[in-house]
Length: 213
Image (cartoon, rainbow, N blue to C red; front, side, top):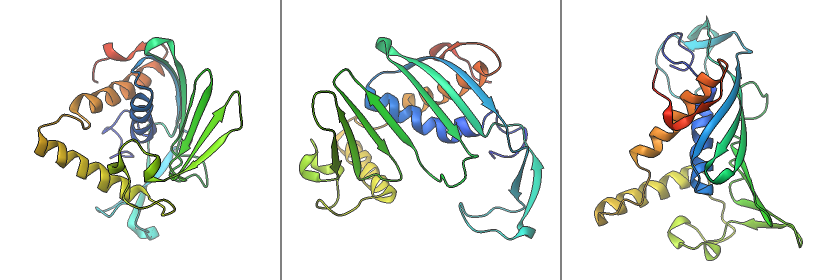
C-alpha cells in the first residue's frame, strides 16, 4: 500500500516517522506540539509486487512491476515539544546500507542519551562533568525485571522486544490495568504524520489541531 498511488499521502513519514515520534514522546514524556517539515520523493519509480507476498522476501524480476509514485522517500521535520523542548528527525528510504537504524538522542543540561535499533543492547550516556558511559543490557540494571528475558551478556533483539511487549499487554488485561499503549498513542502518531505532510506543503502546523485527510 505504501507504493500504490492513491492509497496513502505519505510513505516514509508514516512508515518510519511514526515509530520514531512514538519513541520520542514515550522516552521524553513530552508530546509533540508543532512541526515544520520538508518532504521529497527522490526515487520516482518503485517495484510493486504483482501478487501478495511475505514481507522482506526475495523477489524475482518477473514478480514485480515498476510504478510511478508520489509519496516521499525522504523527510526532515523540526519539532516543538511540550515544555519548550526542541527536536528534529530525519527519515529516509534512500540511504544505501541503512536497514533499520531507528536512532534517538535526548540531551539534557547534564547528560545525554543515545540509542539505536541496530545495536539494541547498548545505551550510550554522555556526561558533562565526567567520563561518558556505555551500558550493556543487564536485567539487574533495570527498574523492572520483566523488561528483560535473559541474564546480562545475552543479546536481546526485536523479536524479544515484541514478546515482552505482548506479555506485558496481556498481563495488563488480566489485571485490569491500563499500563500499555493505548488508542490515543496511535492517534498521536497519526496526527504527527498528517501534520508533517501538510506542513511540507508550506506552513508550520500544530499537531493537536490537525485533521485527517
